[in-house]
Length: 330
Length: 196
Ligand code: SF4
Ligand code: SF4
Ligand code: SF4
Ligand code: SF4
Image (tube, rainbow over all chains, first blue to last red; front, side, top):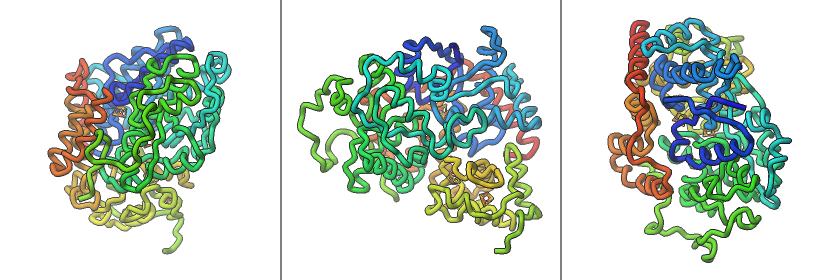
């Protein structure tokens, strides 16, 4: 199985653990992800808030490059483009969909692309999210057959967030309000899946940069929900979700007086661990809230050095380690 | 409010919003049912719910709509679009209103004054490098828009650096000139059509 691969900016650095783990898992499963050469940022949710046509042209350059690189290369007329980031996935599939719907928009976009010697025919690529490929192309059976070290005893809350399941322009593969594909994938790995009623609610996206109060409240609700159902960790499929729930967890704690310490991992990291890969090979250790204590309890990771020390002081100390802090309002 | 079957499209402002959207947002089909506002995670923090905003657009209340914080508090969760019985492209209308507010110079007067600065800084980075560059983005945004907050943001940056989750310098794409040519052409096309 060969796919065009659009990593997105986050996977280059802040979500490097997602890239490392998905590549390691793909190698185990015999799936090939060929990175789109010289791709550019898809504009996240910001570009379209500032420019109309430029935002569509920005995304379309990626579609044009991916189609040229992927289509027809190995017999398949219609190549497939996989994005692991929810926002990238939405932008790529939405632009493709809206271009198909509007010949006028396609015309404008292709006029712009022509300035760079490119063009794109709407619908000529299938844009997929990584989770979709893992559960529907690779399939639960093959995943199960690759499991070497089941994650028995690990209680995970599967977090989907928004954009993989909504609005589902194309390639809808799960329920938009109560999706279950990631639940089943986690169960296939041997983990215990807790009910997580807020599994498709929003983490706030870039709201952390705009309004601290609004963003931290959205994040707090998710953490509380996972804690209420006694999850050992939350598993995500989006780099922004991971960053928000992980890097801002301490900010939530100081704002609401809570003491959450819920590790946030990418689903591909747990796949890798269940396939028997060592924690370092799937990027464990890059998270703000250390996942190793929870993994050590089920024998999926050696106990971390930090684990040996008694439980952290619950009260925070402003002079201590650099923990994420949002600036105060005003 | 009278339960008219759909919003009147008579106001100039209404037509302007529709023209600025990338594809037809189908706004005239709005039933004023309120499903969108009831589904919105930011609803309680918004000046006006999406439903109210659409009624205001139909009524031609240009200033009040473009000054509202509603579009800037939209987190793009798409719950409203999923549930809207009329399949109105609500989230796209929110993006469209953000662009119009920036163009009209209203964006700094909303009760979400920080949002446009963040979006603009992000866009500048992508236009210059082809990729988003988090450290530069955070630094430039805070230094130019919220200098007093810049120091308080430092711990997050330190945490990311310590975990090797942040780049110290931007890594531009190879064919940045090609991307710039494409974006310049797009800008000309929009300018010729008097769109943003
Ligand atoms: S959505 Fe985020 S991660 Fe994806 S390409 Fe854009 S900036 Fe990069
Ligand atoms: S939950 Fe948050 S980060 Fe994830 S897709 Fe939605 S807005 Fe983006
Ligand atoms: S849900 Fe749709 S029809 Fe109902 S008020 Fe909102 S936009 Fe209008
Ligand atoms: S997409 Fe925006 S307006 Fe719609 S429900 Fe989500 S936050 Fe509210």
